[in-house]
Image 1 (cartoon, rainbow, N blue to C red):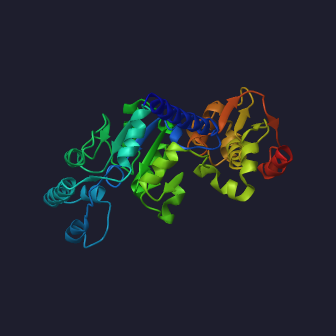
Image 2 (tube, rainbow, N blue to C red):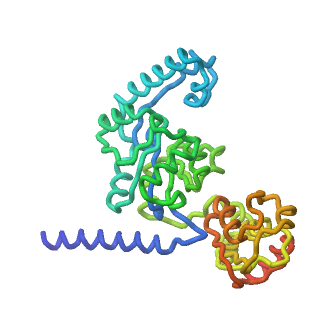
Length: 348
C-alpha cells in the first residue's frame, strides 16, 4: 500500500512538472490563459446552465425584435419599464431554480482554487437569480460577483470588468474573460482584457477573441496542458509571415528615428510587423509637426514626452510591445514604407 501511495505521488509530481515546463515554454509574443492572474467568468452558459428564454419579452414589448434588453428598457415609460423588469426577474428566477453546472465548470473552478487563482463572476442577470442558481447547482460563489444590480454599466460596457479586476487586485491586462456570448467578448476587448469563447463556435465572433473551445471541458483540458497561442494582434501577421518570423521579429528592439514625421504611425507599423521593443530617443516630445502629420494623436498629447504618450496609445493595440526611453535598438528608416524590407534583413 505504501508503494502504491508513492507511485501516485510520483505520477502527480511528474504531471505538475510537465505543466510547469509547458508554462515556461510559453512567452511573448505567444500567450495562454493558464498564465492569467485572474479569471472573470460569465455565469449563464459558462458556470451554470439555466436555459433562459427571453423571447416572450421580445414578443410582448419589442414586436419580436431582439434588442439589448437592459439598455433599451431604460428608455421606456416607467410603467412599461417596471413590467419588463418584473418579467425578466421572473424568467431568470425560474431558470435559476432549475440550474445545473455546465459540464466542466466544477473542474475549472477546482483548477483555479488549487492554484489560488482569483476568479469572479460578471453577469447581466440579477443578483438574486445568480444566488438561487448557485445554491441549486451546489456552487459556492466567489467574493467578487458583479451583476446588473451593481452601480456600474453592464457588459458589453467595460466598467463591470474593470470593477471585477480591481476587486481581485489585478491589472485588467492580467485578467482573462471566459464567456459564451458576444457581450462577454466585446466587453473584454474594451476593458483591455484577453478573452476565451467557450460552448459556441460562432465565426462572426472570432475577431474579438484569443481562442475558442467547442466546450468548457475542452478549455479545462487546454489549461492542464497549455500550448503557445497567438493572440489576436499577431494573428494576421503569423498567417502572412509565419510563426518563425513572429518569434524572431518580436525579439528585436528598434529605435524611432528623431526625424520621423509620424512617430505613432511608425511605431504601429513596426508593431504590426511583430517588433517587440521600441525605444524612443531621450527628450523627444510630441511636437506640433508630429500632431499635424500623425492622425493617431490627440491635442492633449501635444508637448508631452513621447515615450509615455506612445505607451498609452500602444497598450490597447499591442499590449506585449515594450516602449522604452533611450538610444538602444536598431535604427531603421524613418519612412514606414521601408520598415518591412529592413526587418527582413534582420530576421533572416
